[in-house]
Amino acid sequence: MPRLEHVGIAVDAPEAVAACYREVLGVLPYKTETVADQGVRTHFISAGSAKLELLEAVADDSPVAAFLKKRGEGLHHLAFEVDDIDEAFARLQNAGFTPLSEAPIRGADDKRIFFLHPKDTHGVLIECCQSTPPTLTPQEIPFREGTLAAYERGRSEAPTVLLLHGAGGCTRMDTAPLMRRLESDFHVLAVDFSGHGASDMPDASFSADLFADNARSVLDFFDVERADIFGFSMGGTMALRFAHQHPKRVRRLAVHGANIDWTPKRAKAMQSRFNANRVANEYPHYAEQLDRLHADWRTLFRRLRAFIASLPDRAGALTDMAVQVHHSTLVSAVDRDDLFPLEAPLHLYRQLPNSRLALIPGEQHALPAVDLNVLMALLRTHFAWS
Ligand code: CMX
Image (cartoon, rainbow, N blue to C red; front, side, top):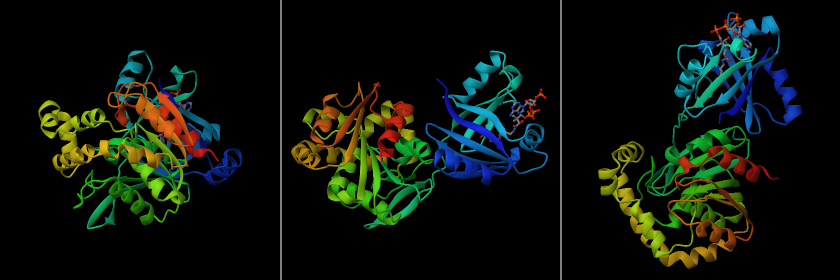
Protein backbone atom coordinates (compact mmCIF):
# COMPACT_ATOMS: atom_id res chain seq x y z
CA MET A 1 0.00 0.00 0.00
CA PRO A 2 1.38 3.46 -0.82
CA ARG A 3 2.82 5.19 2.25
CA LEU A 4 2.56 8.89 3.12
CA GLU A 5 6.14 9.93 2.35
CA HIS A 6 5.92 13.68 2.85
CA VAL A 7 3.65 16.68 3.08
CA GLY A 8 4.63 19.59 0.84
CA ILE A 9 4.11 23.05 2.39
CA ALA A 10 4.59 26.25 0.39
CA VAL A 11 6.46 28.86 2.44
CA ASP A 12 7.48 32.49 2.07
CA ALA A 13 10.22 32.50 4.68
CA PRO A 14 11.72 29.05 5.35
CA GLU A 15 13.67 30.18 8.43
CA ALA A 16 10.50 31.36 10.19
CA VAL A 17 8.62 28.18 9.27
CA ALA A 18 11.56 26.03 10.39
CA ALA A 19 11.59 27.88 13.73
CA CYS A 20 7.86 27.16 14.09
CA TYR A 21 8.32 23.43 13.48
CA ARG A 22 11.27 23.41 15.81
CA GLU A 23 8.84 24.36 18.56
CA VAL A 24 6.21 21.84 17.43
CA LEU A 25 8.42 18.86 16.60
CA GLY A 26 11.71 19.67 18.30
CA VAL A 27 13.80 19.32 15.12
CA LEU A 28 15.29 21.54 12.43
CA PRO A 29 15.45 20.78 8.69
CA TYR A 30 18.00 18.04 8.04
CA LYS A 31 18.52 18.73 4.36
CA THR A 32 18.01 21.51 1.79
CA GLU A 33 17.99 20.87 -1.94
CA THR A 34 17.23 23.05 -4.94
CA VAL A 35 15.27 21.57 -7.85
CA ALA A 36 16.27 24.22 -10.39
CA ASP A 37 14.05 23.08 -13.26
CA GLN A 38 10.97 23.42 -11.00
CA GLY A 39 12.11 26.76 -9.54
CA VAL A 40 11.94 25.54 -5.99
CA ARG A 41 14.21 25.02 -2.98
CA THR A 42 13.12 22.21 -0.65
CA HIS A 43 13.82 21.99 3.08
CA PHE A 44 13.16 18.60 4.67
CA ILE A 45 12.00 18.18 8.26
CA SER A 46 11.64 14.77 9.85
CA ALA A 47 8.19 14.10 11.31
CA GLY A 48 8.38 10.49 12.43
CA SER A 49 7.39 8.03 9.71
CA ALA A 50 6.84 10.84 7.15
CA LYS A 51 8.54 14.16 6.38
CA LEU A 52 7.58 17.76 5.85
CA GLU A 53 8.90 19.34 2.66
CA LEU A 54 9.00 23.13 2.88
CA LEU A 55 8.81 24.58 -0.64
CA GLU A 56 10.44 27.93 -1.21
CA ALA A 57 10.15 29.62 -4.62
CA VAL A 58 13.53 30.51 -6.12
CA ALA A 59 12.18 32.04 -9.35
CA ASP A 60 9.42 34.65 -9.62
CA ASP A 61 7.78 32.78 -12.47
CA SER A 62 7.89 29.39 -10.74
CA PRO A 63 4.69 27.42 -9.92
CA VAL A 64 5.37 27.73 -6.19
CA ALA A 65 5.70 31.52 -6.51
CA ALA A 66 2.34 31.53 -8.34
CA PHE A 67 0.81 29.33 -5.65
CA LEU A 68 2.06 31.62 -2.84
CA LYS A 69 0.78 34.71 -4.63
CA LYS A 70 -2.65 33.16 -5.15
CA ARG A 71 -3.14 31.27 -1.87
CA GLY A 72 -0.40 32.30 0.53
CA GLU A 73 1.57 29.90 2.72
CA GLY A 74 0.09 26.49 3.45
CA LEU A 75 -0.47 22.91 2.36
CA HIS A 76 0.79 22.40 -1.18
CA HIS A 77 0.73 18.65 -1.79
CA LEU A 78 0.60 15.17 -0.25
CA ALA A 79 3.22 12.71 -1.51
CA PHE A 80 2.71 8.95 -1.42
CA GLU A 81 5.56 6.53 -1.96
CA VAL A 82 4.75 3.70 -4.37
CA ASP A 83 6.74 0.55 -5.11
CA ASP A 84 6.73 1.01 -8.89
CA ILE A 85 6.29 4.55 -10.16
CA ASP A 86 5.83 3.56 -13.84
CA GLU A 87 3.14 1.06 -12.91
CA ALA A 88 1.41 3.65 -10.68
CA PHE A 89 1.54 6.24 -13.48
CA ALA A 90 -0.09 3.85 -15.99
CA ARG A 91 -2.64 2.54 -13.50
CA LEU A 92 -3.83 5.97 -12.32
CA GLN A 93 -3.92 7.35 -15.86
CA ASN A 94 -6.05 4.35 -16.95
CA ALA A 95 -8.29 4.95 -13.93
CA GLY A 96 -9.11 8.43 -15.27
CA PHE A 97 -6.74 10.64 -13.26
CA THR A 98 -4.77 13.34 -15.09
CA PRO A 99 -1.01 13.22 -14.51
CA LEU A 100 0.56 16.68 -14.79
CA SER A 101 3.57 15.39 -16.74
CA GLU A 102 3.89 12.97 -19.64
CA ALA A 103 5.87 10.50 -17.55
CA PRO A 104 7.49 10.38 -14.09
CA ILE A 105 10.10 13.13 -13.69
CA ARG A 106 13.00 13.77 -11.35
CA GLY A 107 11.98 15.21 -7.96
CA ALA A 108 13.94 16.24 -4.90
CA ASP A 109 15.63 13.74 -2.57
CA ASP A 110 16.72 11.19 -5.21
CA LYS A 111 13.15 10.43 -6.22
CA ARG A 112 11.12 9.94 -9.38
CA ILE A 113 7.77 11.67 -9.07
CA PHE A 114 4.59 12.70 -10.84
CA PHE A 115 1.63 14.87 -9.79
CA LEU A 116 -2.09 14.30 -10.35
CA HIS A 117 -4.33 17.18 -11.40
CA PRO A 118 -6.24 18.37 -8.30
CA LYS A 119 -9.51 18.49 -10.23
CA ASP A 120 -9.56 14.67 -10.00
CA THR A 121 -8.44 14.51 -6.37
CA HIS A 122 -10.93 16.79 -4.62
CA GLY A 123 -8.73 19.88 -4.72
CA VAL A 124 -5.60 18.39 -3.16
CA LEU A 125 -2.46 18.14 -5.28
CA ILE A 126 -1.20 14.57 -4.97
CA GLU A 127 2.32 13.43 -5.75
CA CYS A 128 3.38 9.82 -6.27
CA CYS A 129 7.05 9.18 -5.69
CA GLN A 130 9.56 6.38 -5.68
CA SER A 131 13.00 6.54 -4.12
CA THR A 132 15.89 5.76 -6.40
CA PRO A 133 19.11 4.33 -4.96
CA PRO A 134 21.08 7.23 -3.47
CA THR A 135 24.27 8.30 -5.14
CA LEU A 136 26.67 6.76 -2.70
CA THR A 137 30.21 7.95 -3.07
CA PRO A 138 32.55 5.98 -0.86
CA GLN A 139 35.24 7.58 1.21
CA GLU A 140 38.47 5.65 1.34
CA ILE A 141 39.61 4.87 4.86
CA PRO A 142 43.08 3.52 5.50
CA PHE A 143 42.83 0.06 6.99
CA ARG A 144 45.91 -2.04 7.69
CA GLU A 145 47.70 -2.53 4.35
CA GLY A 146 44.80 -1.28 2.17
CA THR A 147 41.60 0.77 2.33
CA LEU A 148 37.96 0.38 3.32
CA ALA A 149 35.01 2.01 1.56
CA ALA A 150 32.81 3.95 3.98
CA TYR A 151 29.65 5.97 3.34
CA GLU A 152 28.17 8.90 5.23
CA ARG A 153 24.69 10.47 5.07
CA GLY A 154 22.72 12.82 7.32
CA ARG A 155 24.00 15.56 9.64
CA SER A 156 27.14 14.87 11.63
CA GLU A 157 25.65 16.57 14.76
CA ALA A 158 22.85 13.96 14.91
CA PRO A 159 23.31 10.68 16.82
CA THR A 160 25.33 8.20 14.75
CA VAL A 161 24.04 4.86 13.47
CA LEU A 162 26.56 2.52 11.88
CA LEU A 163 25.17 -0.02 9.38
CA LEU A 164 26.90 -3.34 8.77
CA HIS A 165 25.92 -5.49 5.79
CA GLY A 166 25.83 -9.27 5.44
CA ALA A 167 28.39 -11.81 4.18
CA GLY A 168 28.85 -11.51 0.41
CA GLY A 169 26.83 -8.28 0.40
CA CYS A 170 27.93 -4.67 0.60
CA THR A 171 26.44 -1.29 1.50
CA ARG A 172 24.93 -0.80 -1.96
CA MET A 173 23.38 -4.28 -1.97
CA ASP A 174 22.08 -4.44 1.60
CA THR A 175 22.00 -1.33 3.73
CA ALA A 176 21.72 1.62 1.28
CA PRO A 177 17.89 1.80 1.52
CA LEU A 178 18.17 1.99 5.31
CA MET A 179 20.68 4.82 5.00
CA ARG A 180 18.09 6.80 3.07
CA ARG A 181 15.35 6.17 5.60
CA LEU A 182 17.53 6.94 8.63
CA GLU A 183 19.35 9.99 7.28
CA SER A 184 16.57 12.36 8.29
CA ASP A 185 17.10 11.64 12.00
CA PHE A 186 20.59 10.22 12.31
CA HIS A 187 24.14 10.67 11.20
CA VAL A 188 24.36 7.43 9.21
CA LEU A 189 27.62 5.63 8.50
CA ALA A 190 28.06 2.40 6.59
CA VAL A 191 31.09 0.39 5.57
CA ASP A 192 31.90 -2.31 3.06
CA PHE A 193 33.65 -5.03 5.05
CA SER A 194 37.17 -6.01 3.96
CA GLY A 195 37.04 -7.85 0.64
CA HIS A 196 33.44 -6.74 0.01
CA GLY A 197 32.04 -4.02 -2.27
CA ALA A 198 34.56 -1.25 -2.87
CA SER A 199 36.87 -2.25 0.02
CA ASP A 200 40.23 -3.90 -0.57
CA MET A 201 40.74 -7.63 -0.18
CA PRO A 202 42.85 -8.05 2.97
CA ASP A 203 45.98 -10.19 3.16
CA ALA A 204 44.72 -11.73 6.41
CA SER A 205 42.08 -14.44 6.27
CA PHE A 206 38.53 -13.45 7.19
CA SER A 207 37.76 -13.44 10.91
CA ALA A 208 35.32 -11.83 13.33
CA ASP A 209 38.18 -9.73 14.69
CA LEU A 210 39.01 -8.42 11.22
CA PHE A 211 35.40 -7.37 10.53
CA ALA A 212 34.87 -5.91 14.01
CA ASP A 213 38.05 -3.92 13.45
CA ASN A 214 36.53 -2.58 10.21
CA ALA A 215 33.70 -1.14 12.33
CA ARG A 216 36.14 0.45 14.77
CA SER A 217 38.14 2.05 11.93
CA VAL A 218 35.04 3.70 10.49
CA LEU A 219 34.01 5.21 13.82
CA ASP A 220 37.60 6.40 14.40
CA PHE A 221 37.83 7.93 10.93
CA PHE A 222 34.63 9.92 11.38
CA ASP A 223 35.60 10.82 14.94
CA VAL A 224 32.56 9.15 16.45
CA GLU A 225 33.03 8.08 20.04
CA ARG A 226 29.74 6.19 20.48
CA ALA A 227 27.13 4.89 18.02
CA ASP A 228 24.05 2.79 17.60
CA ILE A 229 24.85 -0.19 15.40
CA PHE A 230 22.59 -2.14 13.06
CA GLY A 231 23.97 -5.34 11.57
CA PHE A 232 22.39 -7.67 9.06
CA SER A 233 23.22 -11.40 9.23
CA MET A 234 27.04 -11.64 9.47
CA GLY A 235 27.03 -7.87 10.10
CA GLY A 236 24.84 -8.57 13.15
CA THR A 237 27.38 -10.96 14.59
CA MET A 238 30.13 -8.41 13.92
CA ALA A 239 28.07 -5.71 15.67
CA LEU A 240 27.91 -7.97 18.74
CA ARG A 241 31.60 -8.70 18.49
CA PHE A 242 32.43 -5.00 18.33
CA ALA A 243 30.14 -4.23 21.29
CA HIS A 244 31.81 -7.01 23.26
CA GLN A 245 35.28 -5.62 22.52
CA HIS A 246 34.39 -1.92 22.89
CA PRO A 247 31.30 -1.73 25.13
CA LYS A 248 31.62 2.02 25.72
CA ARG A 249 31.56 2.81 22.01
CA VAL A 250 28.10 1.32 21.50
CA ARG A 251 24.81 2.79 22.66
CA ARG A 252 22.24 0.31 21.33
CA LEU A 253 22.35 -2.61 18.94
CA ALA A 254 19.92 -3.98 16.40
CA VAL A 255 20.67 -7.23 14.60
CA HIS A 256 18.55 -8.70 11.83
CA GLY A 257 18.83 -12.26 10.50
CA ALA A 258 21.88 -12.97 12.64
CA ASN A 259 22.93 -16.45 13.76
CA ILE A 260 25.50 -17.36 16.39
CA ASP A 261 24.49 -20.99 16.91
CA TRP A 262 26.54 -22.47 14.07
CA THR A 263 25.71 -26.14 13.55
CA PRO A 264 27.46 -27.95 10.66
CA LYS A 265 24.07 -28.00 8.89
CA ARG A 266 23.63 -24.22 9.11
CA ALA A 267 27.23 -23.65 7.99
CA LYS A 268 26.67 -25.92 4.99
CA ALA A 269 23.47 -24.09 4.02
CA MET A 270 25.29 -20.75 4.21
CA GLN A 271 28.31 -22.04 2.30
CA SER A 272 26.14 -23.28 -0.55
CA ARG A 273 25.15 -19.64 -1.18
CA PHE A 274 28.79 -18.87 -1.90
CA ASN A 275 29.39 -21.45 -4.64
CA ALA A 276 30.75 -19.18 -7.40
CA ASN A 277 30.39 -21.67 -10.25
CA ARG A 278 26.79 -22.41 -9.35
CA VAL A 279 25.95 -18.70 -9.11
CA ALA A 280 27.61 -18.01 -12.49
CA ASN A 281 25.76 -20.92 -14.19
CA GLU A 282 22.36 -20.77 -12.54
CA TYR A 283 21.92 -17.10 -11.61
CA PRO A 284 23.58 -15.01 -14.35
CA HIS A 285 21.77 -11.80 -13.34
CA TYR A 286 22.98 -12.13 -9.77
CA ALA A 287 26.49 -12.84 -11.09
CA GLU A 288 26.33 -9.62 -13.16
CA GLN A 289 25.31 -7.68 -10.07
CA LEU A 290 28.20 -9.22 -8.13
CA ASP A 291 30.57 -8.26 -10.96
CA ARG A 292 29.39 -4.67 -10.71
CA LEU A 293 29.47 -4.34 -6.94
CA HIS A 294 32.52 -6.30 -5.78
CA ALA A 295 36.09 -5.97 -7.01
CA ASP A 296 36.56 -9.77 -7.04
CA TRP A 297 33.51 -11.72 -5.91
CA ARG A 298 34.91 -15.15 -6.76
CA THR A 299 37.82 -14.68 -4.35
CA LEU A 300 35.39 -13.17 -1.84
CA PHE A 301 33.13 -16.24 -2.08
CA ARG A 302 36.08 -18.63 -1.73
CA ARG A 303 37.30 -16.87 1.39
CA LEU A 304 33.81 -16.68 2.87
CA ARG A 305 33.40 -20.43 2.46
CA ALA A 306 36.61 -20.99 4.40
CA PHE A 307 35.47 -18.53 7.11
CA ILE A 308 32.04 -20.15 7.43
CA ALA A 309 33.63 -23.62 7.67
CA SER A 310 35.38 -22.47 10.86
CA LEU A 311 32.17 -21.24 12.54
CA PRO A 312 30.71 -24.49 14.00
CA ASP A 313 33.90 -24.85 16.07
CA ARG A 314 33.35 -21.31 17.33
CA ALA A 315 29.64 -21.65 18.23
CA GLY A 316 30.40 -22.06 21.96
CA ALA A 317 32.69 -19.02 21.96
CA LEU A 318 30.05 -16.95 20.15
CA THR A 319 27.43 -17.86 22.74
CA ASP A 320 29.90 -17.03 25.55
CA MET A 321 30.40 -13.66 23.90
CA ALA A 322 26.66 -12.97 23.50
CA VAL A 323 25.89 -13.50 27.18
CA GLN A 324 28.34 -10.72 27.99
CA VAL A 325 26.84 -8.12 25.66
CA HIS A 326 24.66 -6.04 27.98
CA HIS A 327 23.60 -3.37 25.49
CA SER A 328 19.95 -2.98 24.72
CA THR A 329 19.61 -5.10 21.58
CA LEU A 330 16.77 -5.57 19.14
CA VAL A 331 16.91 -9.07 17.63
CA SER A 332 14.79 -9.29 14.48
CA ALA A 333 14.29 -11.88 11.77
CA VAL A 334 11.73 -12.93 9.19
CA ASP A 335 9.51 -15.68 10.52
CA ARG A 336 10.11 -18.12 7.64
CA ASP A 337 13.73 -17.33 6.87
CA ASP A 338 14.89 -19.57 4.01
CA LEU A 339 18.42 -19.78 5.46
CA PHE A 340 18.19 -20.00 9.26
CA PRO A 341 15.39 -21.66 11.25
CA LEU A 342 13.37 -19.71 13.81
CA GLU A 343 15.55 -21.23 16.54
CA ALA A 344 18.44 -19.00 15.37
CA PRO A 345 16.95 -15.63 16.43
CA LEU A 346 15.33 -17.28 19.47
CA HIS A 347 18.70 -18.62 20.63
CA LEU A 348 20.34 -15.23 20.19
CA TYR A 349 17.47 -13.44 21.94
CA ARG A 350 17.72 -15.83 24.90
CA GLN A 351 21.49 -15.48 25.26
CA LEU A 352 21.62 -11.69 25.15
CA PRO A 353 20.89 -10.36 28.63
CA ASN A 354 19.09 -7.18 27.50
CA SER A 355 17.28 -7.97 24.26
CA ARG A 356 13.89 -7.62 22.63
CA LEU A 357 12.62 -9.91 19.88
CA ALA A 358 10.70 -8.94 16.74
CA LEU A 359 9.58 -11.32 14.02
CA ILE A 360 8.64 -9.85 10.66
CA PRO A 361 6.44 -11.89 8.32
CA GLY A 362 8.62 -12.96 5.40
CA GLU A 363 10.29 -15.86 3.63
CA GLN A 364 13.60 -14.53 2.42
CA HIS A 365 16.74 -14.02 4.46
CA ALA A 366 18.04 -11.27 2.11
CA LEU A 367 17.69 -7.77 3.58
CA PRO A 368 16.32 -6.17 0.38
CA ALA A 369 13.37 -8.62 0.57
CA VAL A 370 12.35 -7.53 4.08
CA ASP A 371 9.38 -5.17 4.49
CA LEU A 372 11.32 -1.96 4.99
CA ASN A 373 8.39 -0.07 6.51
CA VAL A 374 8.12 -2.64 9.30
CA LEU A 375 11.87 -2.86 9.89
CA MET A 376 12.18 0.94 9.91
CA ALA A 377 9.38 1.33 12.43
CA LEU A 378 11.18 -1.17 14.70
CA LEU A 379 14.55 0.53 14.31
CA ARG A 380 13.21 4.03 14.89
CA THR A 381 11.50 2.93 18.08
CA HIS A 382 14.51 1.02 19.30
CA PHE A 383 17.21 3.59 18.49
CA ALA A 384 15.19 6.64 19.49
CA TRP A 385 14.40 5.23 22.92
CA SER A 386 15.99 7.58 25.36
N1 CMX B 1 -2.90 22.64 -4.84
C1 CMX B 1 -4.07 22.63 -5.50
N2 CMX B 1 -4.15 22.90 -6.83
C2 CMX B 1 -3.02 23.16 -7.47
C3 CMX B 1 -1.76 23.14 -6.84
C4 CMX B 1 -1.75 22.89 -5.47
N3 CMX B 1 -0.60 22.87 -4.80
N4 CMX B 1 -0.81 23.42 -7.74
C5 CMX B 1 -1.43 23.57 -8.91
N5 CMX B 1 -2.77 23.44 -8.74
C6 CMX B 1 -3.80 23.52 -9.76
C7 CMX B 1 -3.65 24.74 -10.63
O1 CMX B 1 -4.39 25.83 -10.09
C8 CMX B 1 -4.19 24.27 -11.94
O2 CMX B 1 -5.60 24.29 -11.88
P1 CMX B 1 -6.45 24.65 -13.22
O3 CMX B 1 -6.07 23.62 -14.24
O4 CMX B 1 -7.85 24.52 -12.74
O5 CMX B 1 -6.03 26.03 -13.58
C9 CMX B 1 -3.80 22.81 -11.99
O6 CMX B 1 -3.56 22.40 -10.64
C10 CMX B 1 -2.56 22.54 -12.79
O7 CMX B 1 -1.54 23.40 -12.27
P2 CMX B 1 -0.54 24.15 -13.26
O8 CMX B 1 0.48 24.86 -12.42
O9 CMX B 1 -1.26 24.93 -14.27
O10 CMX B 1 0.08 22.89 -14.02
P3 CMX B 1 1.55 22.53 -14.41
O11 CMX B 1 1.47 21.23 -15.12
O12 CMX B 1 2.25 23.66 -15.06
O13 CMX B 1 2.31 22.29 -12.98
C11 CMX B 1 2.69 21.35 -10.84
C12 CMX B 1 1.76 21.43 -12.04
C13 CMX B 1 1.95 20.69 -9.70
C14 CMX B 1 3.90 20.48 -11.23
C15 CMX B 1 3.21 22.75 -10.44
O14 CMX B 1 2.11 23.58 -10.23
C16 CMX B 1 4.02 22.76 -9.17
O15 CMX B 1 3.50 22.95 -8.09
N6 CMX B 1 5.35 22.61 -9.31
C17 CMX B 1 6.25 22.58 -8.18
C18 CMX B 1 6.39 21.17 -7.83
C19 CMX B 1 7.23 20.96 -6.63
O16 CMX B 1 6.83 21.16 -5.52
N7 CMX B 1 8.50 20.52 -6.83
C20 CMX B 1 9.42 20.30 -5.75
C21 CMX B 1 9.89 18.87 -5.69
C22 CMX B 1 8.74 17.99 -5.40
C23 CMX B 1 9.18 16.73 -4.69
O17 CMX B 1 10.16 16.12 -5.05
O18 CMX B 1 8.47 16.38 -3.71
